[in-house]
Image 1 (cartoon, rainbow, N blue to C red):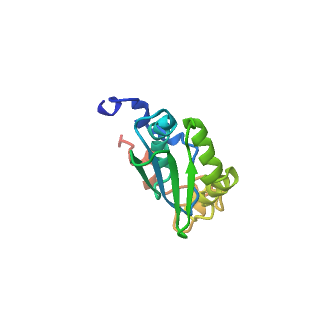
Image 2 (cartoon, one colour; image 1 turned 180 degrees about the vertical axis):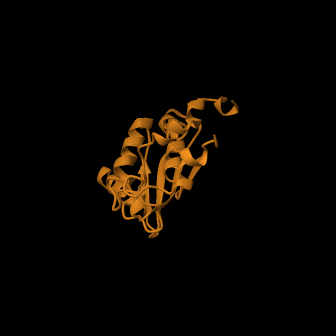
Image 3 (cartoon, one colour; image 1 turned 135 degrees about the vertical axis):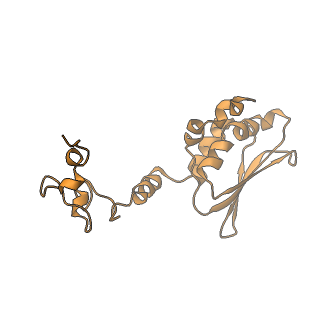
Length: 168
């Protein structure tokens, strides 16, 4: 399996990508991470990019995420909003977990908002849905469908025991 080669192949599994907790606010359109590949005070930023950036990209498909290497003396994250505003987040000498938790608090959606979006995504008013928790309990209640065999017997040409019976 070629996707399991390289450094830390666990990062390429779907289970790992879906485990990300950071869902960015809708107003954020671009997220940039600036760090150097050398230096102890950039270690947390390097590890953050290596371990958490794939999860953030997977969970926020409509956000452009860029990394800039070796352009700055101190690491930082910059967020660009759709209103034109910018937010600068300093990540100097922080570990990857501290950076991740700080981003969840500052630019991530709250648990209540995520729960509300999940409920809104489940469209319960769709007329194609039927079952116990929906408007129609059975498909036979939808116009144009065959009535339930328990209420009205099916014609003999639609029943398997007559259709596939061998003439004796």
